[in-house]
Length: 580
Image (cartoon, helix red, strand yellow):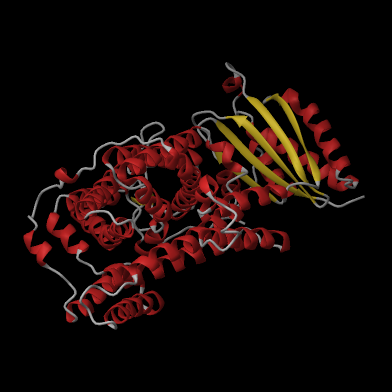
């Protein structure tokens, strides 16, 4: 079925609204994030018992790096940048492990871990196609659920504290009002008001705190209007001691989860930003991830926090109808300007702890539901439900010292005590075990040329025979393979001259379905097969041989996915069949 035009898009990425309008839209885009950026930095620093100067420095670097990353995303130069108004933000997913790192070794250890995980991210981006089997809704959704489940106890235990000198009932009342306002806005407000939920919710909590005399505005009055807290820079530290190696697995796993999340967000951004929906181009994903790698290395050097893309990029486009790059450029510039306004930072840091606690409670609850939604939408059967449930509760159990606390000590206590590590390893291993059984994966290597068709045909016959398919199903599988090969061939024979393209075909599945994966060396430019299939549904019949191949492929296959990376093309074709 063809994708319907999205007439709600006011500005596409390649369109340029007037500068004044772009500035206004960019300002609205980031105003709701200023409070959450400052809140996240303050929560981490305060929960890890860091000095006030470091809190100020974290907020400054959070604004500055987020602004630079957001500006960089609007450009696309070779393999750097996405060309979309994608916002960069300090990553909520890292909150728990960042707090542990600061407690264990301070900013020096945190810098080392951010740099190491950024290096891993660079390697993943370089060979992003290798993640195509690991990046599944089951794994990424469970990881998001683990993030919420493990962070919740760590943060709320330290933030739900009655301020010194305040009545015992002050903290509960402040937190309750903040929570009620945020929930009311999320549940009943219109789209134009919902995006201001963090600002309105935190402001409401601060108003109640002021009534109890707990909102200290003196730091705001003392702060200068313009400046940067350069004296508070913690310095560049490289700490590779025992604590580094103990916490590194947790950082790497969370970084992998964040990378998976970035992939999903950038794919969604591509789908909602155009009036005529387009299939995802994974070269755009790689460009967006390269920006994240760069800003994370910068963050490690400055003693800041890990970064990723925000979770509201696609939803903001759906609400506002604006996906223009110019709007994203101004949004980044506003963030950079905010970093050099100490009065604004001081005002944000004056927010009391119970207000932060209520805000985090809602944010983590939404993160948990988002992970659950990813798992369900990816297809949840009985076997996958066991994997998700066991992995989640293993992570929560180890995080809260509920599983064999007297038997696990030393380095193992540090590793297993991080629920993110144990839960994520569990879901990856158990989900891999789900693939055991069914049709044994078969593989064919050949040149991407018409002469390889006989070898491909014989390969598919053997795969169908192994699955015990009947003759009509076998013929449908062979036809789907032939048309996929034809679709990957250059339309002009002259384009095939020069360096030959290689093809790897794998077949895997159970008796009722076989999944074929065609992996071919990618050219720099070329059409996306999914775009072509969607286009053909709205066009009249034609005698063009390539269009005929696309139409036949749509007929034989139950689903077709085409992912373009910088180094390869990957086409996945599923064919349904019946046993003989």
